[in-house]
Length: 505
Image (cartoon, rainbow, N blue to C red; front, top):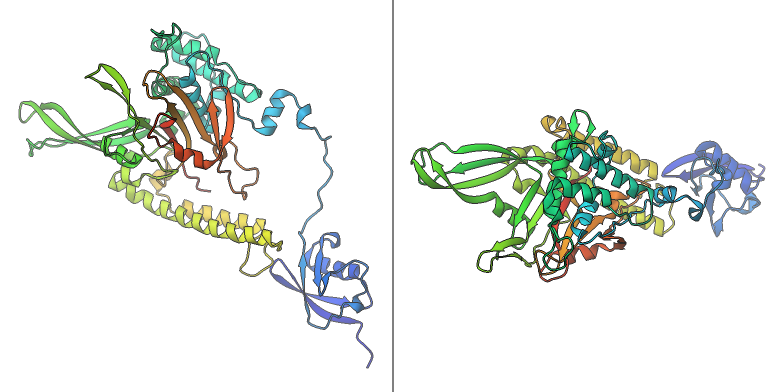
């Protein structure tokens, strides 16, 4: 019986086994072509592992020492090789300034026009809300209109658009002038320097939000931005211990910012917020027919997609008749679970979604570690059973996970566009104040890079770095720097925080 010239072998690619015939009188290229017929990996993209290394195109198969039933591992991606660009390649240094800004997605600073750091920091924080820029771009108002809030909103729109078109710091001249017209307190002069006085960033924030709400800026006509994305609701109950038979007062109150009060016992943001939810107040009692003390308790009934928190660091000291700053160190989380701040009914609705998101995040983190290890060892993704998924498989898995999360959302929450359906938030922006004086010092803002510059590939891990906006100076800082903003000294401390609802995808 003559020697066999063709033998059956196994080929493994991306975790799947294929039956292939090997012609022992052929070459490595002939074998690769046979492999291409079943795996659809072009021969020029294949790496076939054999004893001693990789199979070369001109290697005689008779010298490989293959035997019937032997398995060969094949690496290589399915698909066409990259095509030449349809348009000529342009280098960044040759692009016009507006296109350069878009290409690099640069963040630009704002010029300090004389004690205007409070405004610059607040504006950079608000730019971390993409829906706001979309709504402003759709706003038809014009600067100089009879309606002051509409004129201010138009100036804000134009400023944000200018910031998109340049790589140089932008002076917010028109916006500042309009702000001082609609809110004269921001035109107050300093009694010491002779120029404009330093102002409070939170007061500037309140003025901006009020103008946006009054102008009814919206992503769609039926969804005003402030009401949908920035406004939560509180349930307020007031009870009088002196009148136990008096029916407790029940109120509903909208809010755009939570207050974190700071006492000598406050160590973290959550406890400071909960302290602000429990207050005592004096008011007239119908049952007692006199002024009495009431216990007021607050809990949230609607969480908006974006949540602002104000650290109440400035207060008026009557003994010295002066505004004073609280320097105490107060920690804040980079990931916030707001379930302790809401009513029991809302907590019940949020719980299934938050639990599912946490489970998915853990599973994705585990898969990411496996993928990273596989890439370090130069293994083909998906080539090992139970190992790293291919990009396509990972995307399919993520789509399934997103659908599973959607299935856990309460129907009422699902229909409330702009609310947070899980109660989980990521910290995306901070305004800080530096210095010991309440009516002086310096404001800066910090914005999480991934919040404004998402990765080009959804499978890439988001950047953990942050932008630091110090008026016209913009730098990138590591995440460890954020923990230095807790306070405890005269350096920069957190004053306003911006949280965004965790993504469901």
